[in-house]
Length: 455
Image (cartoon, rainbow, N blue to C red):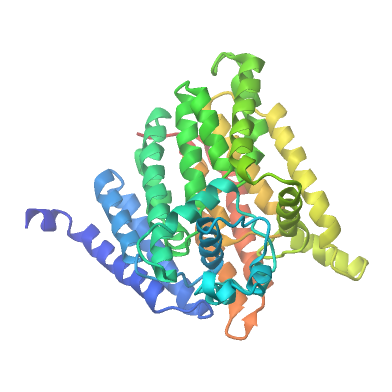
């Protein structure tokens, strides 16, 4: 009774949140944007209130975060169909089939398809014709987790979903554990980690919709913690594993230059940096080794190229360039722009590498935050769950624009209406203008004293 009296308000907020999560998972279709954004906005307010009022109570908020995830356990993802492909790839590996060498549609044409894959047709229909017509682009460690999920008892889509969800939740718990330790190491408020762990964006997009950004981030934050403790070798191994879950951390490699070369970091100099890179890239190569072949390389990189030169969703700067292209040339210039924008990103990362101080842990993580945010700013495709990376990085820095982004990115689901896919560029403009304005305010106008860490 004393506990209930002392924690009456947070328990009430948590119970309301549980109801919202339940409604989101079991009584929502993606095309109902008004209901989607209303539920999400309410959950965000609940999380914001819990973090601001009870951020001092780590175990209370950690417990709430676990409960919110458990509410979603028996649900089937309702905002993304990518999980069908995850299950498909895991099933192929379970049967000894290389997912990089055949597309689902090619395999469906085989005479033994129905017998070997009793719910294969349902998976292909679920992932959609576009996904099913391409080779898998998920790196090997990610594939391993798809395979691991198939070990969960049962032979149905639902049992596979449960297996995937347990992996994603375990990764989030790992992020909570090492994120807390990293914040303590950096002498930053421990409650910052709940902007990730208790954020409804993370709960819904990762646990709910089974995206594996959280698994990548688990290995990445573990790597950072070991690196800043001086254990560079295992930090490099874990960063390589992170790359082999999602390729995104490759973008960060140049930014480690000053951290290693400057004497006030590890004191290892250029030789230490070179060793770090060798171990990271060696780990990545070893993870790919079982699948390596000329056919694999062709298929894998051709599929990756689609994200730069064919697909468009929730972009910002690219949409402006596309509009200019239509007005001046008369057609969509994505094929050409998709080749140029990555080069601009690389140039920006190199500028951050050589012309910005990345000597201390917090300076380094801030540089990573700027790099990935710029990358998404110029990307042709930015799915909501991509924002998980800048969000987590931001909790170890003085900047909070990524938290605002985690709220606003959900408006991108307005594209999925009852009449099919049709992107509303006004919503896209609102999202990015608000996030960019917030970032500019933090960078240029917000008092530095306001941004200093507090205990």
